[in-house]
Each structure stands twice: as C-alpha cells, then as structure tokens.
Length: 302
Figure 1 (cartoon, one colour):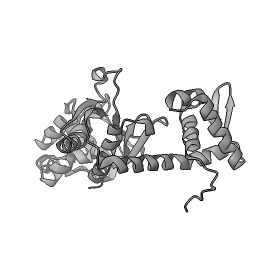
Figure 2 (spheres, rainbow, N blue to C red):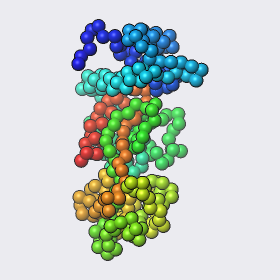
Figure 3 (cartoon, one colour):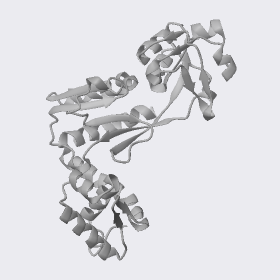
Figure 4 (spheres, one colour):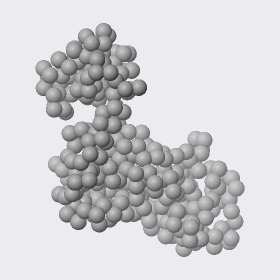
C-alpha cells in the first residue's frame, strides 16, 4: 500500500531512528551519520509528535528504542536498503567503477566465490583495482584502511549493513578410489575409523561439528592449513575431507569426489556481504554490491 502525501512517516526520521538503534546513543549515531545532534533530535521528536507515540528513551547508559520504536525500526531497515538499491540502480548504467576496493573473506571462499566475481567485475570495469584480504591473515590487513566489503558467514554484528546471499553448506567428501578401498562410512562411529583430512583454518583443534549437535574429535591422518590443499589431498585418495560444498562442487561434477554420509552434515551457515556507512558508502562500493549480490546468490543456489 502506497503512502499518502499526508503520511506522518518521514524517511530522514527513519534513518535517524535506525542510526540510534545501531549505535546505542544519539551521540554515537551523530558521529556515525551525516546528522548533527540537533538535527537528529529534531527528527526524532517531530516523528514522535506526528505518530503520537514515544520512539526512543534515553538514560545515562545511552539510548534505546521503545516497543513502538522497535516495531517501526524493523520496517525502517528494509525501506532504507530499498532506497539505497533504487539510487544505485538509477546511476548504475552510467557508472564506471574505478579506484581501489578492498574486499575481505574467509580464505576457503576466495577461490570458489570471491576471485571469480572480482575477475568478472574487472573485465567489465578495467579501471577498477581490487585488494583481496583473507580473514585468516589479519596481520596483513591495514588497520588504517579496513575492507570496504566483507564476505561473512554465520550471525552478523548488529552494527553492520548487509546484503544476504543465501545458505552455505559444509559437507564431507572423498574420492571413489579411497571409498572403494576403505569402505563407505554409514555412522559417526564408522566415520571415526577412516583416514580424515583436517584443515586447521576451520578451527585449530581436530574436531568436526556435525548434525544435531554431534561432533567428532579425531587424530587426523593429514593436517593441511588451507582447504584448497586439503581438497586436493582428498581427490588424490588420502581420505575424507570436511569443506564447503561449493568448494567440492566442480570435483564432484567431474567424478573426482563424492559426498560422504550426508545425514551427518552440519546445518547450513548464512552468508552475506557486509559494508560500512550504509547510504554514505562510496558509490563504487554500492555499485560493486549491485553487481556482486545477484551473481553470488546464483552461485549459492546453483
């Protein structure tokens, strides 16, 4: 249902409300947004008067949303992102991506997701320079120049803006050659008797988290610090590896690997692109998100 011209809702007030909800105080919201403290206070008070309900309460510990404010803010986030998307789409046709973008992701997702995406975007925008940073090597990330966009798994901090991409599945895989020789496990107990390849980047201890809260602690036959190398070892017949399904997708399609014990695979993780500043993010960041989001969603759904 469209808003009438007389609607008491004001977009700037929704942005102010969202900023306070994210940052926990009017002062912090002011520092993180383009609003002055006076402007932000005015927007919130005017919105409260128009609606006839209190939206924000303040104390010495900061500011919090009232129940009415929480309900309104639940809708405000989607509206703010929709407006940002509309603005980006409106200028996308004429925007040439240039400058430098810093992207960060788990190392295991670099090869199957982030690198192919970056190469596609750079092919269409030759002036764009990209710096790829791995989560596992924080000492190589310049603290003074943090990533513009972060590919993140699992639950997200409340303070970030995000584009949800879909579900990321983790599975168990091995080569037919290995399974024909060692047998195909059909339970957690039989899995424990197999040669298991451990990738410490997924957790230093050799423990696999599996379905329904189950876990397997084991002594790995082979321990490798990168998932790409662990996957290669599994293809060569060294044992069973635990990795993201999309990492193993091509090898499975080629008959080099096959899924193992699927009922024990853990629940999916969510995957999202996160970025700072929201509507104040550089145009190149928003444009990259417009190109990246549908492509990454397609890769996860494929």
